[in-house]
Image 1 (cartoon, rainbow, N blue to C red):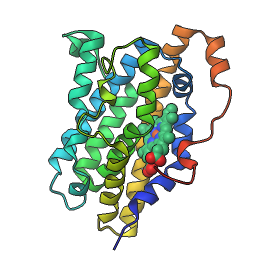
Image 2: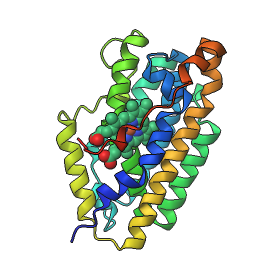
Image 3: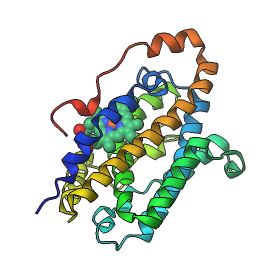
Length: 238
Ligand code: HEM
């Protein structure tokens, strides 16, 4: 019997997705306004988040529910290390630290891993499905805006082992649907995905100050005035 987890995650996080797309940093990004320093900080936080997430998923790779979404080809830690070295050089570890929101995000991943590992599914879904969707658009914007060559500095978005993103997303959704869980667990995974969205929004919000310094308050305000409709509120998934 299908848990319908894939569609429940999609519909249950639509509002969060719309809100995430409407954070100033993201709105500017979508308009091609992204500063190298901010982008490097953004990826730096993600390095710490993915390191934690991937360690915990690995730990629970044989867990009845988590095993269904164990796809090591998604792993981003190594790609993010490459990006960190590109922006900060060999001693990047001494320069890049997780922000306060990133620290809370990491603490939450650690907590659910210890107490309710199935909730890791909400975290994995939120990040990886996003990276394979909107993330690909963000790479196409960042690369010319930051005058980068190929995937240099955007290795994070390059899923070398997943050439067909659309097919993989379909496989991921099917894997979600095969997980045998009751309604209460389904609901808590959706709630956890919404928590993951919230942490991601907070990390983007933290960067707003840096971005305003880089581009100026007047430009920032004019770029972020409108409210954008949400990409996942459109009826058909692809
Ligand atoms: C400017 C920012 C963003 C844009 C333009 C964007 C765009 C999109 C688009 C077009 C889709 C639909 C693709 C599909 O139906 O398969 C999508 C799906 C998704 N996005 Fe985003 N996104 C953005 C930010 C985010 C953020 C910050 C997150 C969370 C960290 C996120 C998580 C997701 C997830 C989980 C899905 C899959 C929905 C599903 O089909 O279940 N997105 N995004």
